[in-house]
Structure formats: C-alpha cells, structure tokens
Image: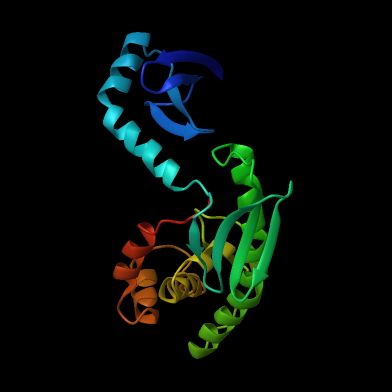
Amino acid sequence: MKKYQYEDHEFGTIILYLHPTARHLIFKIRDNSLQITVPEGITYAQIIQSINKNRENIRKIYARKNDKILRPGTLLESRNFSIAIQTHNKNKYLFKLHNNILFIFCPDTTEFESSETQKIISAGIKRFIKREAEKYLPERLDLLAKQLNLTYNSVSVSHGRKRLGRCDMRRNILLSYHLMFLPDRLIDYVIFHELAHLSEMNHGERFHQLCNRYCQGKEKILEKELKSFPFPIE
C-alpha cells in the first residue's frame, strides 16, 4: 500500500494511503493526525476537493476523538467501579482500586494527547475491567440461561469491542469485557442475543422472535440503544 503526504492549512500533514481494493475515500484520525484511504485511479485534485467538501465532518471526527482522550478530570463509569485519572509527582503510572474507584495516577509531566500515554492508561483500565468481567459475566449468563431452561457448553471472556458476544455451533459462548461499561439492561440484551443463537444460528425472523421474547418485547429498543452507546475506550 503506497503512502503519500498532503499539507493542509487546517489539518496539517494528512497521510494518504493508496489502497488497491478501496472503492471510496475513507477518513480516519489516528495518532491525532488525519489519514485517508484512497482508491486507485482518483486524482490529486479529487482528493483535495473531497477534503474541502468534508471539512465540517472531519472537524466532528476530531472533536469525537478528542472527547475520548483519557486525561486528568476524566471520570468514567463501569458496572463495578468508577475510574478517575489524576497526576502525581512520581515518574511512574500507578493503578489503585479503592472503595469502588479505580484511581489512575500519571506522572505530572505526562503528555496525555500522545498515543503511547493513551495505550498505557487504556491497558491498565482493561486489566481491571477484565478481572471484574471474568467474575460477573459467566455468573450472569448462567443465571439467565437457567431461567430460560437453556444449556450451553462453555463461556469465555474476550477483549472485542465491535463484537460484544458470539455463540458458535458447539454452543460455546464468548462475551466481551467491554460489556462492563454498559448498563445492566444492555448486558442482559447481549446475553439474551447469544442465548437465542443456541436455537437459531442465523439472524432470521425466528431468531428475532426468540430474542424479543427473551427481552420481554424490547429487542428493537435495546438494539438501537446499544448501537448508539459511546464506549469510553477502544
């Protein structure tokens, strides 16, 4: 994949990636810089025209990205504890769970906009979240399955965010620890979704009828709410 650069008066250095299978321009913010995947055959003038046409949307992408920067003052909520980020005068990162609050202490010289800093903070949060998820999610799955008189083979906890749950042909269920950022009703919705797959492995009409029954007639409402939920970390 070929790589080029374009200097923009507003967004600075823009990285252009020429991708042979791309069908249209794809805009992303990575490491606080704009990156565009470009189809073959598109001209430089067309790229600039597209950037100018989409400036307002690009600004919104930057704004959403900046909203997700983990920094002092950030207060996140998970199912089992809150997360507070602070600075201290030591030269190392400390993570301490106390009274249902995960305190994250960062060196007072920390550059919070850097991708490396964000990775360190996110990794620490995920470590504690996964620990809680491995306790709660299997227990919740087991309880809901027993209430519906359903049996599954095994359950495991994964790290995926885009795919929060999965049920395979062998009746193994996988649940993501990112579920711990959701309210209880949405955690249960994802679990009911996977339990419905024990009977229907596709997303056909019978599957949705079953899932809707498990969700007490609220499947569509919960599905819509889940799609719009703003996860705090990637």
